[in-house]
Amino acid sequence: MAGGSVSECKEYLFKVLVIGELGVGKTSIIKRYVHQLFSQHYRATIGVDFALKVINWDSRTLVRLQLWDIAGQSRFGNMTRVYYKEAVGAFVVFDVTRNATFDAVTKWKHDLDSKVKLANGSPIPSVLLANKCDQKKDTSSNAALMDTFCKETGFLGWFETSAKENMNVEEAARFLVEHILLNDQHVPHEERTNDCVKLNQDAIAAEPKPGCC
Ligand code: GTP
Ligand code: MG
Image 1 (cartoon, protein in one colour):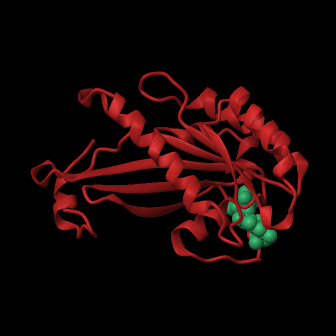
Image 2: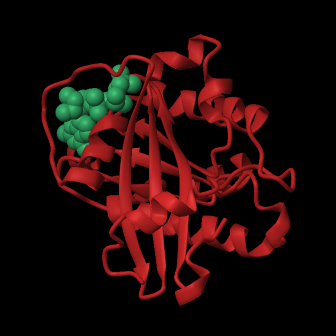
């Protein structure tokens, strides 16, 4: 639910999932996006991790992205249903150097669509990330195939990303948030229970609001 109506500043809190096979770079993408950091060192995520990205979307809109960094191994357990609850957007990540991780994208997408939906019953917006593109130079020939794959599988689109070289991470996030905001505008005000977490107004009042209000 949008808050801060007095000064006409809107604040949103969106839950966004980051899913995909083990070691594809989910944690690295989030670290790059939120902290501008990258490490070669691989430490597998256990269960789920969280990060918060605050975006001054425009002069009157503040977006908080609550990023759920879900361990690749979670697909084999029963926890994803719990993790996906009330998410309003998702990134599905694969590693361009490992074909098996692309094959698993369909499984992740199916898992996602079968376990979470928007309030109006449609699938949550999702974007496909072809990560570690710094390690594979010639992917341009795959572009048409990827477009077709996205249409068939129900992704809004795809981006070649590199957490290492900081390529397209911001762009992909912006693209997803644009779509989440669009969905939000289509939902009648009184029905907005799923796509925005209700913000505690006292807490909001107590918190500083960078560049907004
Ligand atoms: P799980 O938590 O096990 O599901 O893995 P993950 O998807 O979170 O992968 P993580 O971010 O931990 O990255 C795995 C390994 O890939 C690490 O050694 C990273 O340094 C490396 N890596 C991640 N992104 C990139 C990238 O864009 N380019 C390159 N070259 N390496 C990357
Ligand atoms: Mg991880």
